Length: 411
Image 1 (cartoon, rainbow, N blue to C red):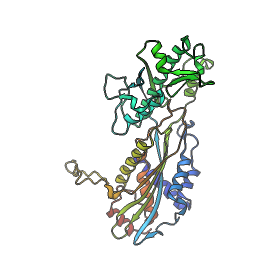
Image 2: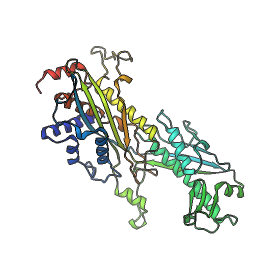
Image 3: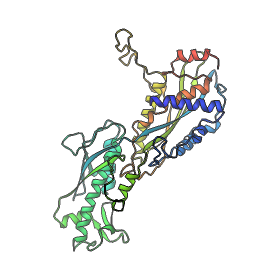
């Protein structure tokens, strides 16, 4: 996030000096492969983020000249910036137990920081098992549960959802194996590969009418429940290719050997109103568009992006830690003196997502969004201030004194 401020402001400066639209300068430098290692992206929909964000924001109406747009006495500026966040490789385990009465218990030693892990994993399990969400109990937050890694680096959603999904698939493979060997089952004698699950029912791919509910299979086998366990990953570091000959490598191992660079991407668009007499900057409009693989729950995902963007707006305009130069102690270590945004500082925020299929990042195709939403936010605000005033502020936060100092300098 701090580095993106410098890079994205530099892109804005470059676009201005060349007389090119800020989006166009980014498209001219668009990376089809990761320039740091030459690897292809596992998926990348950044162009779509630019397009959708510009459409929602009305970017085509932007005056290309700085300092030329006003709303009464205030200067109006429009800015944008790119967001990118890497996939940090991790893995974890999960256990899924499906009961004959139609309810399920899902377990993983994960955490919910308030970002919706309970919700999204319950939904993933319900969908994978073909049962209503209210029939799923998700248990987490205990070291006696199947081990998984920390919630950090935007890894939890992809890691836990993929492990739960794969554990559910193991449940179904066990039930399918039982059904095709059961003489009383309508699926008796079928090939396991020809049987699929649909809404809690096993049926033939080619003849959906031929099949039965999982409860019937378990009842005949006198089973109260069926359990599946699995290890899910997020990223590619744990997909190590085997040392066997290439002919013996399966598809997944070959993809791992080829290597993919994995990132989530996005774009922020911002309108600011700058008072040239007081130096105050207010964010008047905001649009964020993200591409982060499969979005498990649009409502909770939107809330995360709004929260991260607000963090970034605070960093851009008011949040600053001050130390005593003699004692090295924080002098504003409370919310009375450390300023953060309040409702009056934040406009209505529009968040949208690009539907993205990523077959490489994990079994669910999920990328994290917990942190990408703050990346590029400070630059989007700074680029908007530059467009409004014609002055480039390179120090954060952009407080009124800095804005007034900049306004006194020649453009």
